[in-house]
Length: 135
Image 1 (cartoon, rainbow, N blue to C red):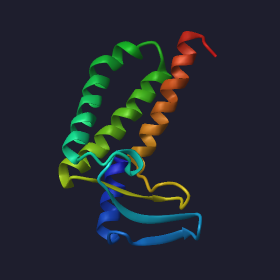
Image 2: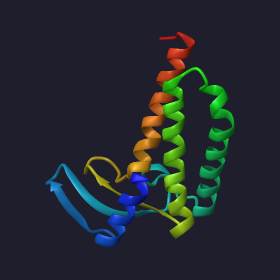
Image 3: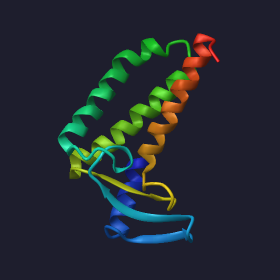
């Protein structure tokens, strides 16, 4: 929900390409239209990326409860992955691309859904090592 709300606020208040320095040369709000996957990579088209996001969501909903039944870390990681995938999927279905706006100047511009996906991936790795006893 935070992802969808912040994207709508950015779309309502910033023109495409407009940037507002929050901490000059460190952090800006910059409205970017992202037709690709994470961080603008792989611009293969909105239909293909929407299909992948929908497939990821279905797999998480079907397989996730079994994989993460004994691990709160895995459940949280899968939940973040699901939320991020759905947040960006809504944009792809609504406007054919994803609105990005968090700009740290040294990294590609991203959004809250992207943060959820990356944090979820990290938690899945951590949860895997915790549940298997590997280090």
